[in-house]
Image (tube, rainbow over all chains, first blue to last red; front, side, top):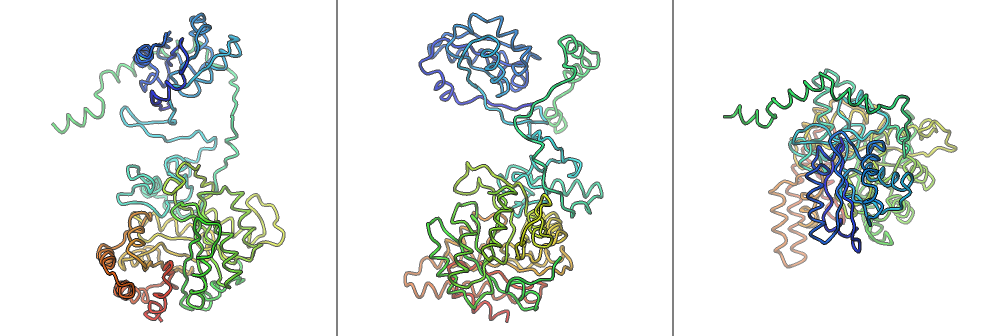
Length: 261
Length: 306
């Protein structure tokens, strides 16, 4: 998922200078998981803007309804057409994908030239959790994990080096750039050692093929997932049992605490 | 791999001489007057000088322009430091061709410090190649006359490529694994990051094992306490010994300029005599003396080894 955090209010208010009617639109995707575009976040933003004297219309998108998917996003924009038509600005509480889908849809499909602004800064594709997340993949289009014992040096190494650690590895195998981060290449070394593949560590990896990342990358799906397919996937017994297990399982942090006690 | 010898540095390695090199730092200026003056003072003391490429990611005069100008005006052979931090593979390739065109005979291929550590922290870090792939690219250009894409190079550059090693790296085995990659792709000599501790050096040589690639060990006799302190605080992968640092700090109190110089020299000689005597017994092929702006210390230090 795409990690994100809300921009400073000062920047947000800067976009809204001289504007009165504002639509605040959330996102039911990653932004809901990270609390930057869920109902609570939309309510809180609306409240802050109201205090500043703005007339706010809220658009809350429930879980599973992402702002970055035109089909879903359009339903909520059309439902609030009059507010959208009459507003001075739309503030989108999602990553940049959502902001741009809203921009494109209001402009090209609704025929409305509206000022659309980002509320959040997207911080990257992250994994892990529930509390600690880290960026592990940059969707480069040419996965190198098969050569690097399952750790992506392009992302996990601060310099994105493909052939071993730089000379700046700190005590505790930490990164030259940030002592809070682990050196990716020491991690790769340790993994290769465990896997009995240290011979491979001494062989050069070719430079990464950045030609696979010609931006913007465009895709066409042969069979897009329809709403019914999605409902089916969500109502699937395995999905439900998975969520049930999560509900009743103690989060890892609590488990650790329980063990200590 | 070619046996051709293009530079005096490589000639000395091949002849089995104990090799001494120095270091020159271009600055944030529209000229290289100061490194040129330093190069003149180092003539005859060292066979070649590294010309630094945006050290610690502070943006200075291009090391290629500086190498050319220093070499042309002083006759000091230069080792053109080339970092991957600021250039993609096309720019690196162009600069290597440029170096060949300008008569540069040695390149030290480096990954480089991250731009966020320097004075232009908002710059986009490049690292399109790393030090190993840069070394491999240069060898391909020189030996095969081909670029990365396999395209022919007319009149390929005639130069040698060295690489760095960091004996003080926190994880020595991973560091040595990387050094072995460099050896496997044809690095022609290695130059270590500054080392202060003999046991660190011994562990590095032990871990690396036997190699035909000549290794220069880096030392940094500081001219002032400020230099030593900067190294300790800001140079990645280097810890300056506290005793040496304290002795250098004490020289700050001396008001008489000549007496201060004498004391600084004494502190350096005291510290490095033991280190260099130990160095003689290691497999090192020579010593890279990063005595920036401090040429007077080089002759007495050389005497210890010679």
